[in-house]
Image (tube, rainbow, N blue to C red; front, side, top):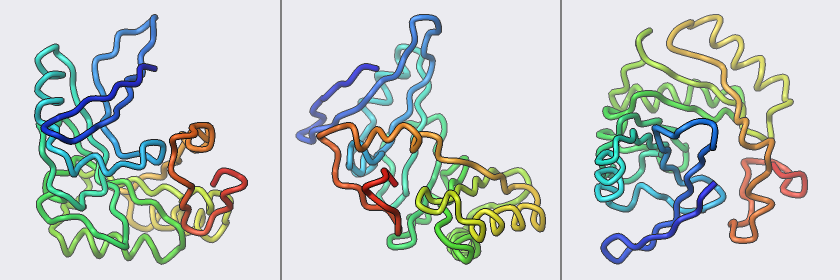
Length: 189
């Protein structure tokens, strides 16, 4: 892992690159994950994406979509949050959606919000349903995800927030305090 900081037109941006000696990295993900506590998409990332494209790299963005997306991304994952829903133009630009489900009714709430913003949720789309980490053992949430997928089929898929197992946000002293949707911060979720 390589940690970098840069200043783009007066804005300070921190980003991580993960790589392996055995495999060459051919893509990068830009995200405002909890460890950075930074809504990365508020910045114009054109310089970063252009630089990575110039050396033959693909660039993937994961965002809540609440700010205009500035940069040339090869793939956009939109993960909306109910307290501030995504901009319509970002919904239209998304290649896939990642919905974090903290209660059974959340699936319908997010699907309705995305549809109202023009999302194409046809069988050709990709919509991941991830249990929110504090609910990852809640049978009501897990059953709601399972039943939704059984009832609606494609484009819905069950997912899991694997990165939470590493508790990276708890190990990094630069991290913002945990702000789960009803979790237990002392246990890392």
